[in-house]
Amino acid sequence: MATPVIRVEHVGKRLDGTEVLRDVSFQVLSGEIFVIMGPSGTGKSVLLKNLIGLLRPDAGAIYIWDQPVHEMREEEFDRLRLRMGVVFQSTALFDSLTVGENVAFPMRRHRQMSGRKIRTEVLDLLALVGLEQAADQLPATLSGGMRKRVAIARALALDPDLIFYDEPTSGLDPPTSRDVDVLIAGLGRELGVTSVIVTHDLATAFGIADRLAVLAHGQVLAIGTPAEVRADRRPEVQRFINPGGVEERL
Amino acid sequence: MPGAPVLEWVGRTVLGLLEDTGRLVRLLLSTLRWLARGRLEARQTIRQMEQIGVSSLPIVLVTGIFSGAVLAFQTARQLLAFGVPGLVGGLVALSLAREAAPVFTAVATAGRSGAGIAAEIGTMAVTEQLDALRVMATNPVRFLVVPRVVAGLLMLPLLTLFANLAGLVGGGIVAALSGVETTTFLGSVQRFLTPADLTAGMAKGAVFGVVITLVGSRRGLDTDGGAAGVGRAATAAVVTAIILILVLNLFLDMVLF
Image 1 (cartoon, chains in turn yellow, orange):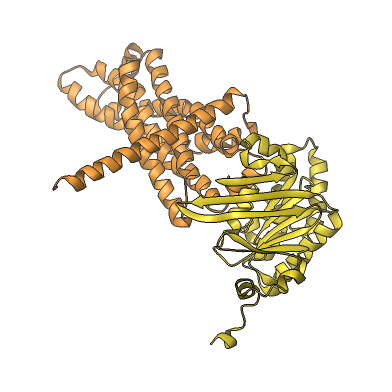
Image 2 (cartoon, chains in turn orange, brown; image 1 turned 180 degrees about the vertical axis):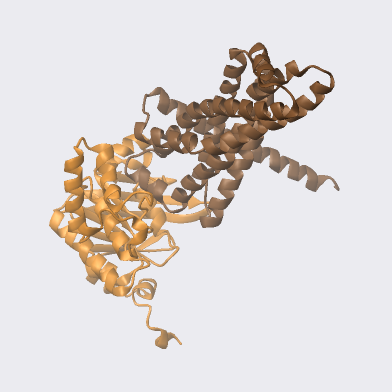
């Protein structure tokens, strides 16, 4: 049985006096694609920020590789971060650097590598996401889908064991969204990386998840394989996973 | 109570000022901690020295030339009336070295580089680039703030020195046009201006350099609210830095002269 990479235990978080997360618990297993899904404004991104250490929980505990990250100092967390990659919703690419320099950034900071070796690895990573020809372009000259791919390449730069994706398909058209899904799923399966994806995109969630958690009003409503979650007949779960078409609701 | 809103406003303003000061001091301490550990990003620092120093040189030279010119214009008129042209150069040089060069250089740099620092870091804040730095195990203070503060500390004294030279050129020209001979002007400068005056002015510049870069960085790091927030951060950085420069200038005068 796969070992848990992440253990979230009874996590609570308040922001500006509002309870955003309440008693959230789940585990992410090694090598799986775990999706945290739910409607907008339900605390998904806050949960992700707690997982990657940009926020600390007010209650409960988070363990990554059995390390209690909820109580870690920033510099201790940095050691774990060298084994993680994060793809931000806005991509968060450095707009003053070229695509190649963006991907090279983590390598230059944390690996003792020659410039030539870095260049080779950057081109390999860009080839992996189908963008080797864009190495010398600035991010602003790329489409939204291409920028997401660059962000994924940068997240892979330190050969991570764990990757977090925040709304990887937001702002993309449906075909591009599915391309990104295929890329994420492919990387997860080929590289054996554990992937945690936060999304409100049902196609992403049910298309590539090994397991998923449905979050609503800061709480985990359901957790399981896509088939198990689909089979959950509770109205609050069905309301999100099967919202119905506009015509039905008019 | 009729005075209550005023009291409330005063209280809020004082609390806000104290909070701002506290955040600024915390950033200064964090910067000093990274420096004490010898963790200086050389490439970033050189880039910032170019941004803050070399790129600010034109505006500093223009500011210096016209500061010296105005000082010479005013003093020459008065002193020629009293028949003491030999004091013009000295007065211009001392005013420049002690006050005009460091303060005007700092104000010009605050407008140019302080706003730029706040806008650049602020844009990074609202586009998650600061978060990206953190998750790539890169401390934003170490990577962004320390190089800027070091660049400000090193470049403002040099800019101040250039402003002095430019001011003397501008002052010399206007003095000559007003009827003070150039040899008299330069002789007066030599007689009155001491190296201590120049270095004290440059020391002021160093303090102002830290203030400008630290305030710009603080405002940038605290930015939220999208493009409008970036604009507010840039404006606030300039206003705060200029106020601090003027206040600190008084205290530095008391200590240095």
